[in-house]
Image (cartoon, rainbow, N blue to C red; front, side, top):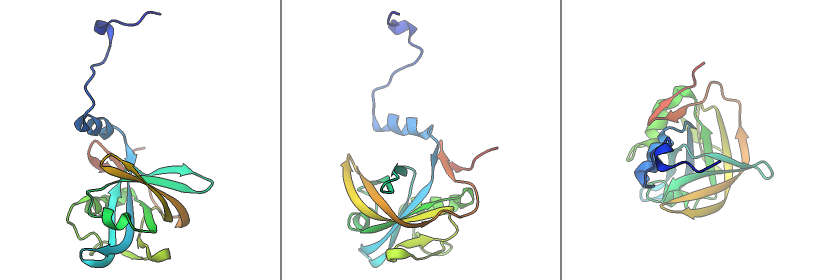
Length: 176
């Protein structure tokens, strides 16, 4: 087989830029999670959290997960020091909750957000499909982000409903 000439190539190539990466990943449907922690902020001891679409199961033995967080995120200073974090899998009925935790400057834990202190003092969101409390085991530098690796220590997989997805810049649910 011979290599195709430039005229035969059925795609156009763009130089890799942050905008290109964002455009490509808008086409990737991802599950939506909220990551929470409790710690000291500029406003005192309080819970923090953010919406994440980068949640990944890493290993079963030991049970490890990972997610990315921007170092410019208002949650990063607490996450940089937290020993334990909460991971919440959102249901398709929770797009407003996802938007609240994605919004810069929002009081994410004020009503109507329902939450309670869970194991290790981690803030847990009410009504999610599933949650884990995890012990942070690594924070790996990755450009303007950190990849956080954490080991599950407690959880509940028994929430009702279908998962919330993020695709083409919007929250949506699964279609039959």
